[in-house]
Amino acid sequence: MNPGRAWVFGDNVDTDVLAPGKYMKSGIEELARHCLEAVEPGFAASVQAGDVVVGRRNFGTGSSREQAPQALKHLGIAALVAESFAGLFYRNAINLGLPAVVCADAQRIRAGDRVRVDPQAGRIENLSTGETLACEPIPDHLMQMLNDGGLVPHLEKRLARQKESSR
Amino acid sequence: MAPQTLAQKIIARAAGRDSVAPGEIVTCRVDLAMMHDSGGPRRVKPLLEKLGAKVWDPDKVVVITDHYLPANDDESRRIIHIAREWVKEAGVKRFHDGVGICHVVLPQMGYLHPGMFVVGGDSHSPTGGAFGAYMFGIGATEMLGVLVTGEIWLKVPQTILVEWSGKLGPAVSAKDMMLALCGELGLDGGQYQAIQYAGDAISALSMQERMTLCNMAPEVGAQTGLVAPDQVTRAFLESVGATGADGAAWQGDPGAPLLAHHHFDAAALEPQVAAPHSPANAAPVARHAGTRIDTAYIGACTGAKIEDLRMAAKVLQGRRVAENVRFVVAPASAHDQAIAAREGTLQILVDAGAELLANSCGICAGYGDDRLGENEVAITSTARNFKGRMGAASSQVYLASPFTVAASAIAGKICDPREFLK
Image (cartoon, rainbow over all chains, first blue to last red; front, side, top):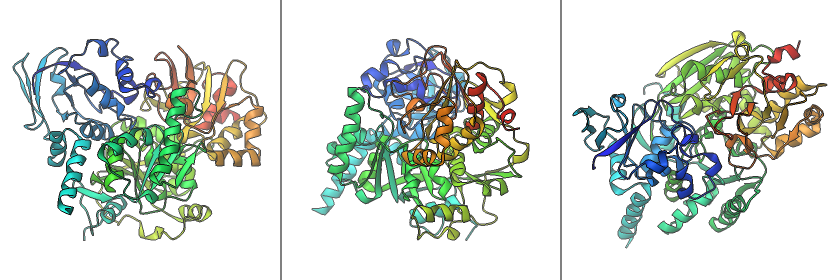
């Protein structure tokens, strides 16, 4: 994964600020424009492809709406790093092919740092500070899904295999 | 075999195993999958088409519309229309359209019973845990996976035992228990594990109050909340025709491993209020008493079931809400509203000045037109008060029980409901 700029947030970033209810009936394009605007106005406008979102505890708390990680992915966020994730949000992120990495030292990353996240190795290199941070490894079955690009392509492969073996 | 918790037993059964250990990753067969209009058909239909796949078992799928109702604009009407068309196309017969919020309708239809392994396309799906089922929320893509395969992976949770003993005081309810728990454990105290509620104060609760407990398990970060089935469960299941399940078989073993055991005294619990913008900002009502409010809202799966309406009516009987307060009631289901109408509860609310809204998620989800305005201060019987959830980012939402919401509506400011029940 190429290095990206870090956007740093606090504890309990919730799905209502990630995917505001008002825009939930809109397409992801419109919804993503309002991602995090209640806490960081201008985020959607200034974020760049390859950037990394860093949270503290319980990132993604709240709703099951997968538009929360989908909006981040749509804006080009390459990976999420947090001390912990809300369980439902974590599943949704991985299902959409967006790596979510648990890092106890996430608070050592400052806003604007250039970081390279390696979910497979469980490592974050902070190119701005020269630090390397250890992360919890992503379980094998989820890493496989991430490598496939998420649950939909993963299912596509599984269905293709089933078709193949039933021939 | 090592002693197992209730959660472990249900998961083991769904995984086709004799036992499972906390931390293990297992694949479970799903007994029932519930979706609503927002995360359901409009999201899964295009993905099913993309995969060229069919629903594994349409008889195990329930679709309930509740988020985009009333459908006041073209986009909402389109979303509801997709749900109506898709159920026909997919052969889903258990479709309930515009009759209430999914978490409340599901058990009313008799679809849940002890020991079931159930997924729901909504974070408040753990509500079903009140019936001794293992039920949790998932996102739309994960629901697609369930629809295609009938399976889902799970990391076997540890169990956090939340024990309440003693007797709740007047005007104190399950909602207060949950707000207090949010304050105690914080939004991530549940660590995505399973919470089991137990103790004589829990045994004394009705099914709908137990639903409120389990409904808010996600607010403390748990994957689900559970109550082991007992005679209250059995009586409810019989009343809705969900017979045939053996509640006695679905109990945790004595000595089963626990991640934590919290003990609370129900008698000492005071009415709680959670200040903006987190359910974890809970404190006894006195802390916020006197805070002026614009809106009082009895709504949502958490706070507008028939028993919630009765709590509000108990306070509002023979009274009117303050002049400058908008008092809004959105009964959680048509069934609950019909009971309220029949027994006179609804009339008490209307006479007190209630504006009735549809049997849907309404203002709580923040999806529709009815939203809180700039700087509007509201007290609600709902589950979440995250910034901007129910309207403008500048709006302020205080969470409380239906008792406290009703009392505050009368006073025009946050108020201890016990003052009206003397």
